[in-house]
Picture (cartoon, rainbow, N blue to C red):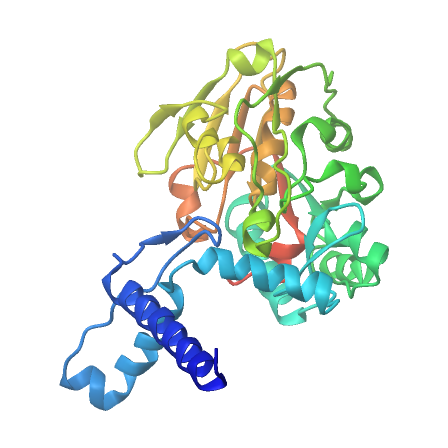
Length: 369
């Protein structure tokens, strides 16, 4: 075969490949959602004079073509594996993997403006609802997983002591409960942001003890029947094994009455939402995931004490472990309800109040309303 013939064949094969790929791009139905990235995908932008002359059409069209490219997830995986193992990059889009196979996300540097915003939101809650009501107010900070993984591979991480000191200086009206000493790498999922509920019973007991409540820590361990793919396994695009999610039950939790105010009206629900356990993010099974206000009533309580928890997603798996010590636990997420509206649903009068947030949320706190 002559060189000319080879060149013609190679050119023809390349042309056919590019034509087939182009036709695939144009003819395939647009996907609405990326499970791996856990976000909505861009759709075909509107084509009219306004969008064309403003330049918005081409900008949005470029985003659309990137989001809807055929085999997008496969190419993402190839890129991630190549950068990690071939080019020896330490992270891919701020997500890195340790030698032991633990995925984590860089959280750096400390953002004092975000800490100030969080502190302002907490002080607003205190002054609006808790001051002079007899409420005992406690504050705790949950370190993100980078706290224990960054040192393993030499990655940058927050100065957690400086962050804690900064927040304590601005929240001196609350009693601080330090849980850092109780957390190790084993307490977090390998492929997800969050901590493992079965491994934070001692954290819950320490918090309870600081608030004057004794928790037995006796639970039944239940294994979720579905494999758990944490958020980092999807975002990293790396081929990692799924994990097992374990949730804790007891007679107390089984007999609780749980009410969600997600719709603005009371709706009976459960401590563990098993429908969401089978969904794209199984961690949402804990208290139903993102919910602005949940009330858990414990008919087996040997006390009339009440607890109000202001929390982020870490609190979804922690709050059920505090129920044993209270007759009523109200769980509030001010990412989904305006702080100024909390008083319409919760009456503050001589309760324990726990404000507990992760360093990730504190360091990027604009979501707090």
